[in-house]
Image (cartoon, rainbow, N blue to C red; front, side):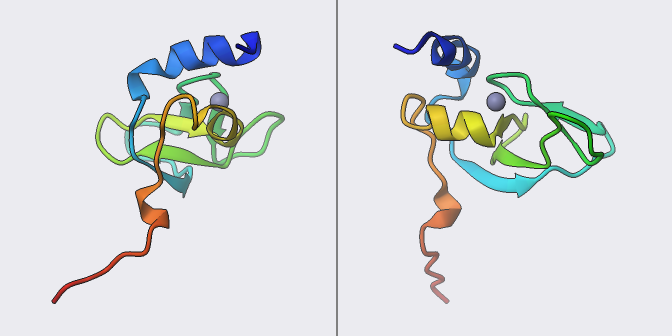
Length: 92
Ligand SMILES: [Zn+2]
């Protein structure tokens, strides 16, 4: 196992199997920033080195954010899914 992945997998273990959706970070009433649950990268609306503007977030509370790099590297190991990427069939 790649040691650079191992510590991030341990950080994100509690999110294994979680459905995620891709979303731009938006400041909320509670917070003007968030951190990647795996590597602690920062999400915010302002521009600065290392600041993430878009990432992946859990679909249920408490919302946890995952940066694009961690999603790319760890989605297989942590079995994340993107339900929104499947076609949605609406039955009326
Ligand atoms: Zn990350």
